[in-house]
Amino acid sequence: MTSTQSAPVALPRIAITFCTQCRWMLRAAYFGQELLSTFGNQIGEIALIPATGGLFTVDLTYVPAAVQEGEEAALTKVLLWDRKAKGGFPETKVLKQLVRDHIDPKKDLGHSDKHGKKKQETDDVKSSDGQEKVAVETADANVKRNPDGTICEDCR
Image (cartoon, rainbow, N blue to C red; front, side, top):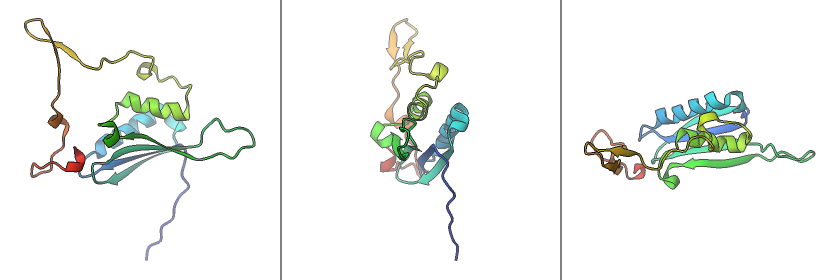
């Protein structure tokens, strides 16, 4: 028989749940590394949670700083990102902004802040004849395929 013990959770805690079938572990680890390098000791824990079914979610559990004196600190859990609901993965700067807005709203994120340079929604490229064309990616380009070439319906 094995027994399980749970260690105390260090807050704020960011849990990144990712689909192992879609091979999104490196993406999850990259986001975790970026958040740790930006927030350092302000983050108590980052958890990478393997799952299946095309999941990629980022949850934040924290105690809000705006707790009045004498009040009990209420634990808050927020879903920061859901790939299925949002239709894709977050940009790194967007994920950093979402975390910052909850754990340290006054923190300046430098060039990746909301008030920094704004990225255009579409990238314009010039063709050889000088006319502007909008670069469009096909939807299938970002879909991960199984070794047999099939696509998991949940991963679309």
